[in-house]
Length: 374
Image (cartoon, rainbow, N blue to C red; front, top):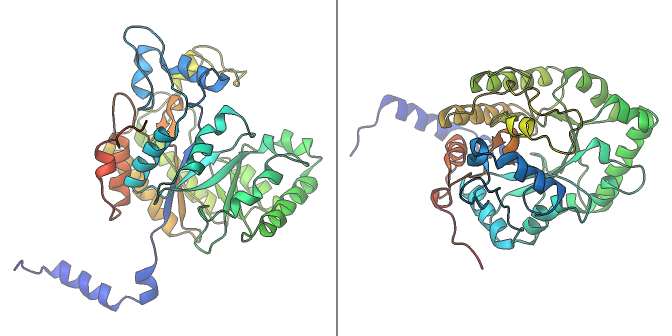
């Protein structure tokens, strides 16, 4: 019989005398942001990704399902399929990821194909989901504030610790607020959205303002009625900085947000390196010029560094009432932030995620891809 150490004895006694409520409390949920530009061949976003990641120095970043021809021929991203999405679900679930935060787009956009297939999947368990909406897409009539309420009532929708569905809004600006006619009309639209969500059968939604700008958070979150703060990403334009600097920047950001007195969903960074987009600008970034800012990036994380940073995000979330954390990102491959396996079959970031969560789930899905479907 193994010898019982003093540390193990004390741990056992502490567990025995812990309150049932505390012992039963589940750990914070960790989600990953999804930006799904990879699934609609011929569309503007997917073709932009082809141009960004086809150069030899960037091909290793491409998602595992990309087709990489020999020589200098460009990458190919196959049309989205249920089998491919089901493999993604299995990988994320096997790594212990709790939910995906899908960036939303209008119905029919190629950027919605992954979400459509996710919703059509019959796999259980699977990551839950929530929605991120860019502020520029909000409209007084129609648009996300009118289309999304039924989704927040879905049983698979991610909620807070007390069961409120989270709805994240990012990239707000003074110009956008002015376009609404000021704070009051936008606040009224968000209040009406809350009513629609409740009418759809969900609890009062937890509205989350995503901004790394502390001044914006201080000015807008209370007056617009937001319930919590987060950020889509953290970065400060550092020049060829180590990953540790990026992790520190994000972690300071969580603390600065919390100091404003609002609940925080901390966003951990799996990287930030936009050199593919700098070399081959995407059509929707009007100000980017080829090569401009090529030195402004962070080194890719080593697996142990990523694990440690993700663990700190989950630990921070445990101090917050919402008990939620985010990772940037599942698949922002051309911006340097990904957890999804990459070419040719690199699972190192997915394994780092699993190591950070330490969840009692089988790891088979992290070790090999499920068999391809038809």
